[in-house]
Amino acid sequence: MQPFTFFHGARLCTFVDTTVKKTKIPYRDPFGYPIWVKRIVIFLFGIIVWYRCNYINKLKIKGGFNLKKLPSKNVLFVSNHQTYFMDAAALILVFCHVKNKIHDRSDKFWPLALPKLNVFFIAAKETMKSGILPRLLALAGSVSIKRTWREAGINVKRNADQKDIKNIKSAIRLGWVITFPQGSTKPFIKGRRGTAHLIKELNPTVVPVVINGFRRAFDKKGLRTKKRGTELNIEFKKPLVFSPEDNNQQIMDKIMDEIEQAPNYKAFRKFNVPNKITQE
Image (cartoon, rainbow, N blue to C red; front, side, top):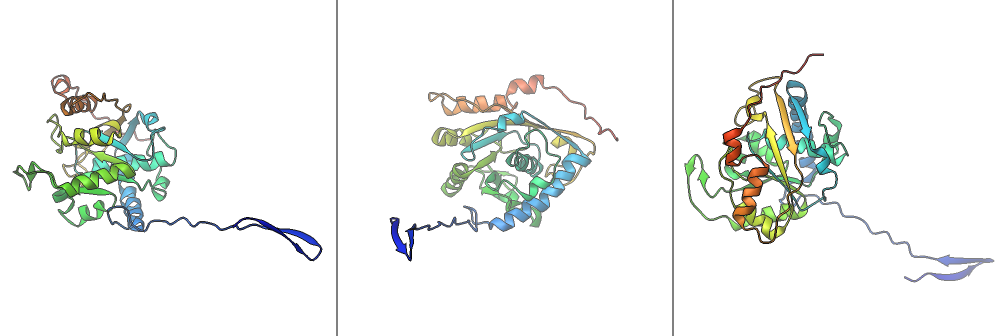
Protein backbone atom coordinates (compact mmCIF):
# COMPACT_ATOMS: atom_id res chain seq x y z
CA MET A 1 0.00 0.00 0.00
CA GLN A 2 1.30 3.46 -0.93
CA PRO A 3 1.79 6.02 1.91
CA PHE A 4 -0.85 8.77 2.02
CA THR A 5 -1.32 12.01 3.99
CA PHE A 6 -4.46 13.14 5.83
CA PHE A 7 -5.61 15.70 8.42
CA HIS A 8 -6.43 14.47 11.92
CA GLY A 9 -7.95 17.43 13.73
CA ALA A 10 -5.39 20.19 13.37
CA ARG A 11 -2.52 17.79 12.63
CA LEU A 12 -1.17 16.65 9.27
CA CYS A 13 -0.55 12.88 9.47
CA THR A 14 1.01 10.36 7.09
CA PHE A 15 -0.04 6.72 7.02
CA VAL A 16 2.60 4.14 6.10
CA ASP A 17 1.92 0.39 5.80
CA THR A 18 4.51 -1.44 7.94
CA THR A 19 3.74 -5.07 7.20
CA VAL A 20 6.44 -7.32 8.69
CA LYS A 21 7.32 -10.56 6.91
CA LYS A 22 7.73 -13.46 9.32
CA THR A 23 10.71 -15.74 8.80
CA LYS A 24 9.62 -19.34 8.80
CA ILE A 25 11.92 -21.45 10.95
CA PRO A 26 12.15 -25.03 9.59
CA TYR A 27 10.99 -27.76 11.94
CA ARG A 28 12.91 -30.52 10.16
CA ASP A 29 16.12 -30.73 8.18
CA PRO A 30 16.04 -31.84 4.51
CA PHE A 31 16.25 -35.50 5.53
CA GLY A 32 13.32 -35.44 7.90
CA TYR A 33 15.21 -35.18 11.22
CA PRO A 34 13.59 -32.72 13.68
CA ILE A 35 15.88 -29.73 14.24
CA TRP A 36 15.29 -29.70 18.00
CA VAL A 37 16.31 -33.38 18.22
CA LYS A 38 19.44 -32.62 16.21
CA ARG A 39 20.33 -29.81 18.64
CA ILE A 40 19.90 -32.12 21.64
CA VAL A 41 21.93 -34.95 20.08
CA ILE A 42 24.79 -32.63 19.09
CA PHE A 43 24.87 -31.10 22.57
CA LEU A 44 24.67 -34.33 24.61
CA PHE A 45 27.01 -36.43 22.50
CA GLY A 46 29.15 -33.37 21.86
CA ILE A 47 29.87 -33.02 25.57
CA ILE A 48 31.17 -36.61 25.59
CA VAL A 49 33.28 -35.98 22.48
CA TRP A 50 34.56 -32.69 23.96
CA TYR A 51 35.63 -34.50 27.16
CA ARG A 52 37.30 -37.34 25.25
CA CYS A 53 39.17 -34.93 22.97
CA ASN A 54 40.31 -32.43 25.59
CA TYR A 55 40.67 -34.27 28.89
CA ILE A 56 41.13 -37.98 28.20
CA ASN A 57 43.22 -37.10 25.14
CA LYS A 58 44.47 -33.86 23.61
CA LEU A 59 43.13 -32.60 20.29
CA LYS A 60 45.32 -30.22 18.29
CA ILE A 61 44.00 -28.35 15.26
CA LYS A 62 46.20 -27.15 12.42
CA GLY A 63 45.10 -24.96 9.53
CA GLY A 64 41.98 -23.62 11.21
CA PHE A 65 42.50 -20.32 9.38
CA ASN A 66 41.56 -22.16 6.16
CA LEU A 67 38.00 -22.39 7.50
CA LYS A 68 37.49 -18.67 8.12
CA LYS A 69 36.36 -17.64 4.65
CA LEU A 70 34.48 -20.76 3.60
CA PRO A 71 30.94 -20.27 2.27
CA SER A 72 28.06 -21.42 4.45
CA LYS A 73 27.07 -24.12 1.96
CA ASN A 74 28.35 -26.15 -0.99
CA VAL A 75 31.46 -27.24 0.93
CA LEU A 76 32.83 -30.79 0.86
CA PHE A 77 35.38 -31.96 3.43
CA VAL A 78 37.36 -35.00 2.24
CA SER A 79 39.22 -36.86 4.96
CA ASN A 80 41.11 -40.02 5.71
CA HIS A 81 39.25 -42.40 8.01
CA GLN A 82 40.41 -44.04 11.25
CA THR A 83 37.29 -44.86 13.31
CA TYR A 84 33.61 -45.26 12.46
CA PHE A 85 32.24 -42.48 14.64
CA MET A 86 34.92 -40.40 16.42
CA ASP A 87 36.35 -38.93 13.21
CA ALA A 88 33.09 -37.29 12.17
CA ALA A 89 32.16 -36.45 15.78
CA ALA A 90 35.44 -34.58 16.34
CA LEU A 91 34.98 -32.66 13.08
CA ILE A 92 31.45 -31.63 14.09
CA LEU A 93 32.88 -30.43 17.43
CA VAL A 94 35.41 -28.30 15.53
CA PHE A 95 32.72 -26.93 13.19
CA CYS A 96 30.60 -25.85 16.16
CA HIS A 97 33.59 -23.81 17.32
CA VAL A 98 34.10 -22.38 13.81
CA LYS A 99 30.46 -21.28 13.69
CA ASN A 100 31.17 -19.27 16.86
CA LYS A 101 34.36 -17.78 15.37
CA ILE A 102 36.82 -20.07 17.18
CA HIS A 103 39.04 -21.54 14.46
CA ASP A 104 42.15 -23.00 16.09
CA ARG A 105 40.87 -24.88 19.13
CA SER A 106 38.07 -27.13 20.34
CA ASP A 107 38.36 -26.94 24.12
CA LYS A 108 35.21 -24.88 24.78
CA PHE A 109 31.94 -26.68 25.45
CA TRP A 110 29.55 -23.73 25.11
CA PRO A 111 29.67 -23.73 21.25
CA LEU A 112 27.78 -27.02 21.45
CA ALA A 113 24.77 -25.04 22.71
CA LEU A 114 24.97 -22.97 19.48
CA PRO A 115 25.85 -25.69 16.97
CA LYS A 116 26.29 -25.48 13.23
CA LEU A 117 23.17 -27.32 12.09
CA ASN A 118 23.82 -27.57 8.36
CA VAL A 119 26.67 -30.06 8.80
CA PHE A 120 26.21 -33.56 7.40
CA PHE A 121 28.39 -36.64 7.18
CA ILE A 122 28.20 -39.50 4.71
CA ALA A 123 28.07 -42.92 6.38
CA ALA A 124 27.24 -46.51 5.48
CA LYS A 125 23.60 -47.29 6.15
CA GLU A 126 24.45 -50.65 7.75
CA THR A 127 26.81 -48.91 10.20
CA MET A 128 24.26 -46.32 11.26
CA LYS A 129 21.63 -49.02 11.86
CA SER A 130 23.91 -51.37 13.81
CA GLY A 131 22.53 -50.46 17.24
CA ILE A 132 20.69 -47.92 19.36
CA LEU A 133 23.71 -45.65 19.81
CA PRO A 134 24.52 -45.39 16.07
CA ARG A 135 20.84 -44.69 15.35
CA LEU A 136 20.94 -41.79 17.82
CA LEU A 137 24.22 -40.52 16.37
CA ALA A 138 22.63 -40.54 12.91
CA LEU A 139 20.30 -37.77 14.10
CA ALA A 140 23.32 -35.44 14.28
CA GLY A 141 23.36 -35.25 10.47
CA SER A 142 23.99 -38.60 8.84
CA VAL A 143 23.44 -39.02 5.10
CA SER A 144 23.21 -42.81 5.17
CA ILE A 145 23.97 -44.65 1.94
CA LYS A 146 24.24 -48.23 0.72
CA ARG A 147 27.82 -49.09 -0.13
CA THR A 148 28.19 -50.43 -3.66
CA TRP A 149 31.18 -52.66 -2.92
CA ARG A 150 30.64 -54.16 0.53
CA GLU A 151 27.83 -55.07 2.93
CA ALA A 152 27.89 -56.93 6.26
CA GLY A 153 31.55 -57.87 5.73
CA ILE A 154 30.88 -59.42 2.31
CA ASN A 155 32.15 -58.04 -1.00
CA VAL A 156 29.30 -57.08 -3.32
CA LYS A 157 29.00 -55.33 -6.66
CA ARG A 158 25.96 -53.19 -7.35
CA ASN A 159 24.99 -49.86 -8.82
CA ALA A 160 24.70 -46.78 -6.65
CA ASP A 161 21.23 -46.06 -5.30
CA GLN A 162 19.98 -42.92 -7.08
CA LYS A 163 18.13 -41.85 -3.94
CA ASP A 164 21.42 -41.90 -2.02
CA ILE A 165 23.09 -39.76 -4.68
CA LYS A 166 20.19 -37.30 -4.58
CA ASN A 167 20.48 -37.02 -0.77
CA ILE A 168 24.23 -36.37 -0.95
CA LYS A 169 23.72 -33.65 -3.57
CA SER A 170 21.02 -32.02 -1.42
CA ALA A 171 23.32 -32.04 1.62
CA ILE A 172 26.19 -30.42 -0.30
CA ARG A 173 23.92 -27.72 -1.73
CA LEU A 174 22.59 -26.91 1.74
CA GLY A 175 25.69 -26.96 3.91
CA TRP A 176 29.00 -28.57 4.85
CA VAL A 177 29.42 -32.27 4.14
CA ILE A 178 32.06 -34.63 5.55
CA THR A 179 33.01 -37.60 3.40
CA PHE A 180 35.63 -40.32 3.67
CA PRO A 181 36.45 -41.18 0.04
CA GLN A 182 38.17 -44.45 0.94
CA GLY A 183 34.95 -45.76 2.49
CA SER A 184 36.97 -47.76 5.00
CA THR A 185 39.11 -47.30 8.10
CA LYS A 186 41.94 -49.28 6.46
CA PRO A 187 44.80 -46.90 5.60
CA PHE A 188 46.19 -46.36 2.10
CA ILE A 189 43.45 -48.09 0.14
CA LYS A 190 42.15 -46.52 -3.07
CA GLY A 191 39.52 -43.81 -2.91
CA ARG A 192 36.10 -44.33 -4.47
CA ARG A 193 35.54 -42.30 -7.64
CA GLY A 194 31.97 -41.43 -6.68
CA THR A 195 33.49 -38.47 -4.82
CA ALA A 196 35.04 -37.23 -8.08
CA HIS A 197 31.69 -37.52 -9.90
CA LEU A 198 30.06 -35.28 -7.28
CA ILE A 199 32.88 -32.73 -7.47
CA LYS A 200 32.66 -32.47 -11.27
CA GLU A 201 28.88 -32.10 -11.20
CA LEU A 202 28.41 -29.75 -8.22
CA ASN A 203 31.76 -27.91 -8.16
CA PRO A 204 31.81 -27.52 -4.35
CA THR A 205 34.60 -26.00 -2.31
CA VAL A 206 36.72 -29.08 -1.50
CA VAL A 207 38.71 -28.96 1.75
CA PRO A 208 41.21 -31.80 2.42
CA VAL A 209 41.43 -32.99 6.03
CA VAL A 210 44.13 -35.17 7.59
CA ILE A 211 43.40 -36.81 10.93
CA ASN A 212 45.85 -38.75 13.07
CA GLY A 213 45.91 -40.42 16.48
CA PHE A 214 42.29 -41.57 16.49
CA ARG A 215 43.18 -45.16 15.58
CA ARG A 216 45.63 -45.22 18.50
CA ALA A 217 43.27 -43.64 21.01
CA PHE A 218 40.00 -45.45 20.23
CA ASP A 219 38.72 -48.81 19.07
CA LYS A 220 37.65 -49.36 15.46
CA LYS A 221 34.14 -48.02 16.07
CA GLY A 222 35.43 -45.06 18.07
CA LEU A 223 33.14 -45.84 21.00
CA ARG A 224 35.69 -47.21 23.49
CA THR A 225 38.87 -45.50 24.64
CA LYS A 226 41.85 -47.71 23.90
CA LYS A 227 44.76 -45.51 24.99
CA ARG A 228 44.46 -42.44 27.20
CA GLY A 229 46.70 -39.41 26.88
CA THR A 230 47.01 -39.68 23.09
CA GLU A 231 47.67 -36.64 20.95
CA LEU A 232 44.89 -36.30 18.36
CA ASN A 233 45.53 -34.18 15.28
CA ILE A 234 43.21 -32.62 12.72
CA GLU A 235 44.75 -30.63 9.88
CA PHE A 236 42.65 -28.55 7.49
CA LYS A 237 44.45 -27.82 4.24
CA LYS A 238 43.75 -25.14 1.66
CA PRO A 239 40.75 -25.78 -0.59
CA LEU A 240 41.68 -27.74 -3.69
CA VAL A 241 41.57 -26.19 -7.16
CA PHE A 242 40.64 -28.48 -10.03
CA SER A 243 40.93 -27.86 -13.75
CA PRO A 244 37.81 -28.33 -15.91
CA GLU A 245 39.93 -30.75 -17.95
CA ASP A 246 40.67 -33.00 -14.95
CA ASN A 247 39.07 -36.42 -15.26
CA ASN A 248 37.75 -38.44 -12.33
CA GLN A 249 41.01 -40.29 -11.78
CA GLN A 250 43.05 -37.07 -11.75
CA ILE A 251 40.65 -35.56 -9.20
CA MET A 252 40.94 -38.63 -6.99
CA ASP A 253 44.74 -38.62 -7.28
CA LYS A 254 44.84 -35.01 -6.04
CA ILE A 255 42.48 -35.80 -3.15
CA MET A 256 44.36 -38.92 -2.05
CA ASP A 257 47.64 -37.02 -2.14
CA GLU A 258 46.26 -34.13 -0.06
CA ILE A 259 44.72 -36.41 2.60
CA GLU A 260 48.07 -38.27 2.69
CA GLN A 261 46.72 -41.62 1.59
CA ALA A 262 48.56 -41.87 -1.73
CA PRO A 263 51.03 -44.78 -2.21
CA ASN A 264 54.06 -42.53 -1.67
CA TYR A 265 52.84 -41.77 1.87
CA LYS A 266 52.62 -45.49 2.59
CA ALA A 267 56.23 -45.96 1.58
CA PHE A 268 57.62 -43.01 3.53
CA ARG A 269 55.11 -42.45 6.31
CA LYS A 270 56.41 -41.29 9.67
CA PHE A 271 55.37 -42.98 12.88
CA ASN A 272 54.64 -40.41 15.55
CA VAL A 273 55.17 -41.48 19.13
CA PRO A 274 52.06 -40.56 21.16
CA ASN A 275 52.62 -37.78 23.64
CA LYS A 276 51.24 -38.12 27.11
CA ILE A 277 49.22 -35.17 28.36
CA THR A 278 51.28 -33.23 30.85
CA GLN A 279 49.59 -33.07 34.22
CA GLU A 280 49.57 -29.49 35.41
